[in-house]
Image (cartoon, rainbow, N blue to C red; front, side, top):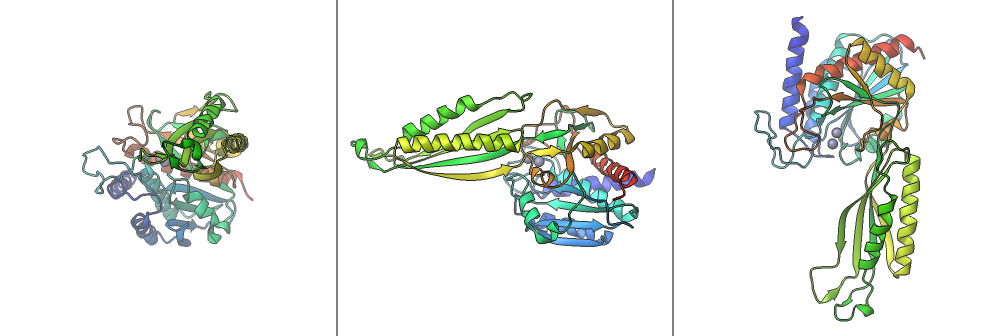
Length: 386
Ligand SMILES: [Zn+2]
Ligand SMILES: [Zn+2]
């Protein structure tokens, strides 16, 4: 069995190269060029560049066009200074792969090599190398690309590595898998005045305090509840450090989390209408801004069954989650539109958590990711003739 071992060591080298050369969300130009160079010799039937600006899509056609399966890997890194000192540490200051997207990209490249060698028969497979996952912008940009809109995959799949779970264990659940997350910026416009005469201005301080106090009881930080809700105050801004001026403008930044999109809509409605009332009461102008939106990942039952079968065929340990994961993952934008599912692969109990300065994707699970995707393809091709 020399061949797979060699391929795996090559994949590990690729992963380490990507780790050493991280790029932030929306800046994945060199990463995309590297991915393209790896893909070209594999002669995919279709190769699209600049999908959602810096993404790449390749398609390997089988003898039948359907079912059409899409697998997604993300490519972006984070604005975190790497604390590791190993040989493949980030060469850039303040940027590093702390979510393992270097590993996710490598798994898709490994799968591409497999698809190039084993000619597909009963299905067609597309691979999406997605940009800008960390700021929640990438999946939406890809979906807005007319070429991507034409793909209409029958099933979509992605995985995320999960520190804290046994190395190589497959983690999943049907229904909500990751939270809906959005960040709300409430802008309150009043009027500056002399600090000696605040009565002549409109200072937003009390309104800011009221809004924060209103939000606190909305929290229902119990992950077993369907109406699970977290409202986290993130940032406040008001006035200037100019002590003769009563502030005339303020902002409250909150991050909202729920398990479902419908619960999110309800929460947004509640906070916005309360904030408007408070603003009116204090005669403040009000405006809302949104940033970093992640739609909830909703795992389809049938798609989860394919994940289950793939784990079983590979004899990988499985854990079914009782509750979804409270971080946002922008594959949600894709899984809300197409039938599919996201699953986790354990990165080991000792692996530092995601977004920590000493995190590093464990190369041992590269093979697990590729084998899971391979078996999902086999299972769907076997069971589904569309
Ligand atoms: Zn992340
Ligand atoms: Zn991630």
